[in-house]
Image (cartoon, rainbow, N blue to C red; front, side, top):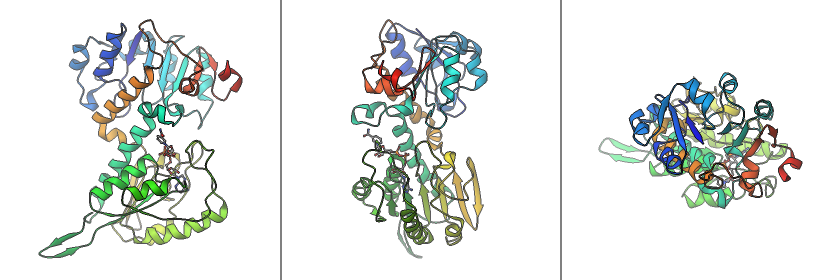
Length: 371
Ligand code: NAD
């Protein structure tokens, strides 16, 4: 099979030379668009060195049997693909299922990394987790860039500097990494989440868990958060407002799969913050957790810097690319053979992640999923 590597919109590359070498050693061929790894500090020479060949973007699109990308391809790029191409990316069919039809009509197969179940067995292929973890780490560093204060407590000859207070909303993968990073920098960290399981994880990192009583049971939600009752939201809003007022840095990561992110920080709450404080909103791409967030922008409102960025993993481009590739390598072990792909649709990971197969829409079609 012919694997293609494209230059992406962001700084990462989906297939590192190490993974490309693995494909070649299994008897496949690899072509890449010139400069594909440049922003991740991976030169064309490194790809050439392992036997990959440089081609124009058009050629990579039209002649590859397999394309692995970070973001789904644009309509214009999809139009150039050959029938029977295998696409691997994060298609987010739960946001907009109509994307499946686009591939089906072209006779393409599409596998979505964001549909891989969040189970222990699939951890080594969990792209959402590796990227979220990087984003959580970078969110804290971004905040320190804008914060006109120290993170740690310092005793200096000129006086004592108090530690910054960091509030993390949503203690999933990104939130937990943000907590750990802020703790390492010496900040006082508090966090909360609607999922009951998060409490123990937050406390194990040495942060204080802010508890709101009466969360909706989430045991059957596959580890994802569920919508909360109005009564809970009211109580949560009151407690958040109190905590936000005291925080120097607020990092928000709360997402609801397939739905807009919940608004957790109102404009009124922002107004109560000390001037110079910083909010980093990692949920900005799905609407943001702060009412004043603008996606992909840094704005200053009521003296508070608000950073809306759901793609901070791209800033750590080299290691994000390495981890992304490792996740793919682990995932493809399930079906990549010397002869090509051999899919066992009894495997829950393959079944869940396949959204279109040979032109048939599989996502949301339980009959086809069972066949
Ligand atoms: P996510 O990005 O979907 O959401 C981030 C966090 O925001 C979640 O912890 C969520 O509970 C929280 N949240 C949502 N609404 C909220 C609200 N109104 N107020 C406060 N917090 C709110 O989550 P994620 O980081 O992708 O993790 C999703 C789940 O998958 C978690 O349970 C995580 O532990 C689990 N997970 C499991 C594995 C594994 O076992 N292999 C790997 C990764 C993640």
